[in-house]
Image 1 (cartoon, rainbow, N blue to C red):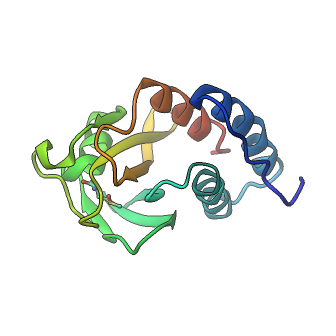
Image 2: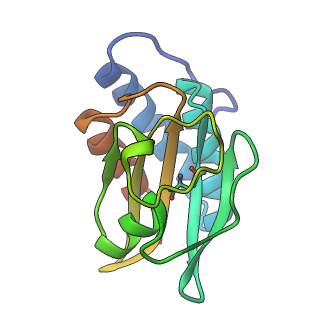
Length: 157
Ligand code: SME
């Protein structure tokens, strides 16, 4: 593994396509989940500069804050609460163009305006979520959903 991430410019698809193999290489041969989540959060932050990017992990039937990049965040989220808890409960990716319009949104940071949450599966079960926040409204789309799903799918479980 090279120590440096190659930062790309171009379309969002080109950026994700450059990032995917680099993330695969970062994860290669490393079985530790926390180490891998930490490097994925760092790689995404470094490439995209998002406001907040990180992970929550299911522990004793709640989501607990895991590795992340960005401002401090809420540590525990109940199932069905907020965007993260809803994505967990529904076991599906949620794209929220305006967090103020999402009933029950949990405002860890008053700067977050839009959000995407991607569940992480081990076999059929959700074991955590990837959460990304932007200070811009309507920032995430189906391209982010597709590639972020691929990225979490690279995590060795
Ligand atoms: N906004 C999230 C909470 C997590 S933070 O954004 C980091 C939610 O509603 O679940």
